[in-house]
Image (cartoon, rainbow, N blue to C red):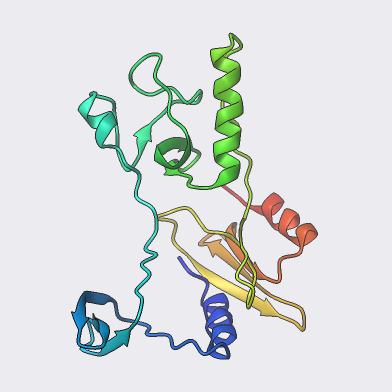
Length: 202
């Protein structure tokens, strides 16, 4: 879920950087043309390009685990200690699917990987240590519009609210009971980020 106010702020920031955004559509094909590459969009537009960079997110590679009979969903399912359904086999990082309060999640970020690595190392050294994932926001270091994002859990119904001042826009996602379930802000301030993290419910 994207906060509309922050999406708008990012699009405005990029508009002054000789960047043209093609929103509400998708790329259907890329083909070689007489003068380079041609990208055909779902809405029928064709864009001539010298280079095409595709950044469409991460999908865990679970084929090896599946071939070995290890339980997978979106990622390789691990327990609180990082152990897979095969005793003695552990997974961490982009491919692991961790248990969360709201179900389970893949966490393709550095902080969860380091937390899992420390806990698994301790477990393997003889001190069983559960992985502790601390709530944190993802820092997006886009120079034109820096962001801190803590998306709401998947499947949570609610609405985005926002406030804007001279320094930043702060967007909050609240559920039907008025509980803060996610947030985002431009020009991230560490103190405010920690305050919002502390207020997160669920």
